[in-house]
Image (tube, rainbow, N blue to C red; front, side):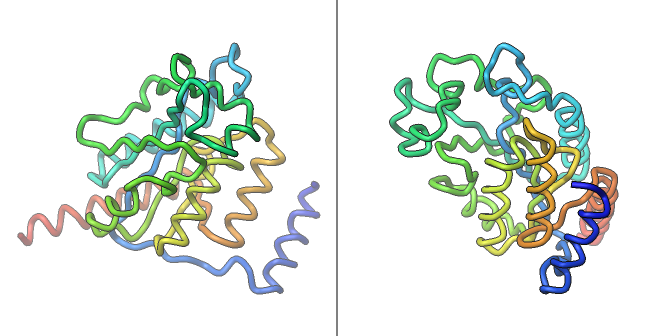
Length: 223
């Protein structure tokens, strides 16, 4: 799709009423979706060539930690036979990368959760499905979810959709998500922006987190 085509597409969606702006709140959390070795190891069938996106994830994660916001990191861990992933496993044979005994489900170095951060182990695409993520975020008073991770068209999209459906403002950080096909990646970013989320560049997310950090510092001073 050419730039002109994309502009016309955006105009068409705007005429239909899509793409209304969502304003983030002051209580964000970062959900880092499945930063697994599978996506950057050329020996794995799931290799997606997303090394640059991984570096952006590291920058975003550092900014989130510096701002003192809650951080959640997800992983996919399945039984050796994949039975706990049901139809999802039957449809996507590549999920063997996350079965018991596979090294590809391990975290990418530098993107592991700390002992103070929540680790969500999931069986399906969304970080919310069949997990305690929503209860955790609700208990912390979170109103906005920054979403990063892999892959854009799969688990990132599913998590973003569920974040919206649970009442959070989802913000997908463009450079900090990635997919094996750039056209699919870009199409999903466009569609999420139009229907369920805000898509921000990394620099904007960093500025937002710096503002949040300042607000939290001011609150601590008043206390």
